[in-house]
Length: 301
Image 1 (cartoon, helix red, strand yellow):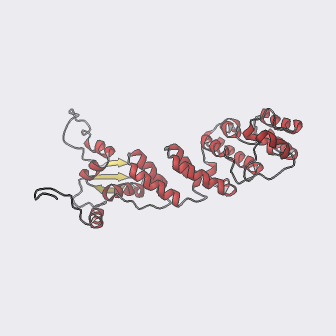
Image 2: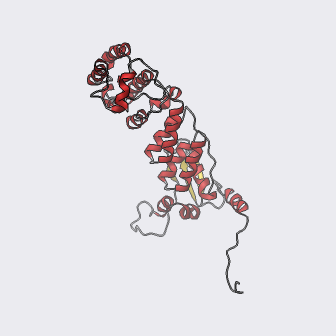
């Protein structure tokens, strides 16, 4: 039995506490720091004590000595305003909302950028909320952008979720702008999957379109930008007539190394996948059956 002087922690209404703190979000009353955010130069008001106790990155920002100060240990904080030109106001306000209330209001237009900010500011709990929202609202149009972000920020769970989504509706995903904006490393990772729901001929065409976009953006030759993803194309799955057409297109942009096409022809001539990595002879989930596939089957077991 507790003694008369023992102490206990008692908690009040958390919802009321959160609601009260929410009224302070971007409220100029009693604020002591201001940010000028985005190209719109929107003013965002905040309170140093809240930002500093909730986020190490803000603590460092707010405790720096003023510009021109000779004393790096000065207790006088910089007055601002702090210019944050590379972040959207709506995104920054979502971060501020989280710092004040431990909750965040997200929509599909800002979720990925809030995820980026959560990583930059070291806010792991906000990162988890963003990942959950992205997974719950994933769409054909956004899945590639989400996968790219997941790889960039090391979010393994989100990577796996995005890849499974792509595997379920590959034919639609490869037609999106997001697919054309994938990095070569991430595209190659997608192409390694056996469960892509698309035929190899359509996949080759999608990679060709991706390569031409990347070549224009990066100002590098098509064969150079496509070197990594092209290794994952399963050319032995194509029929002879399709390889002939592929060679014709390839003369124009040199997308696929000649030795890769030669290896596919060799697989046809020898009626087996000899000399070709076994993964390149495995039909994917969406591969249309072709007569010669039965000769490749022993090699894939």
